[in-house]
Image (cartoon, rainbow over all chains, first blue to last red; front, side, top):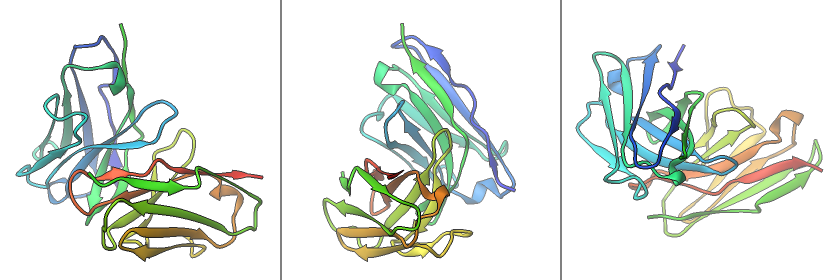
Amino acid sequence: QVQLVESGGGVVQPGRSLRLSCPASGFTFSSYGMHWVRQAPGKGLEWVAVVYYDGSKKFYADSVKGRFTISRDNSKNTLYLQMNSLRAEDTAVYYCAREQLGHLDYWGQGTLVTVSS
Amino acid sequence: EIVLTQSPATLSLSPGERATLSCRASQSISSYLVWYQQKPGQAPRLLIYDASNRATGIPARFSGSGSGTDFTLTISSLEPEDFAVYYCQHRSNWPWTFGQGTKVEIK
């Protein structure tokens, strides 16, 4: 069965960095685009970033462009999100999700990132 | 970026009633519209893709329609487990965006 398990969340001060990981299992990881989606406490879903199946292309939401970097290691079946220059408004649960032809068919359970001094 | 506007923000209905949720795009997105369901403390769940295709395992009481800028998610007869928040999402171009959500609550 498909499993996505996010890790790396926690409390971090504004301006600092954090790296999230999402190891995947139960499917051929290198065949799928992968996304990060976040949800601030009590708020709606916000798409963050995508990386194509082979890592050749990456796209970002304007709110994180230049600060966040999505990447993947297909040899380790793992998705990453490097988050730099963190702000209070980046506080959210971060989900990794698998893309199937334009929709997100499997999601992890999320990891909470809190940006606070 | 394409803005998706969902209405109403909250829908108060009783079990067995019909729910009609709307999602409007700021520009045409063809049929590139997806619907998700989210319950408290859980990750979103895929319901409908490409405007009208039910995802695997989704009951037939869920249906989607629309194209261009106006889309609808219909739940024909609400079951207790259907009370949740519903989000639409487009895949027309980058960046993808989500609507702000419609909460379906028990009346």
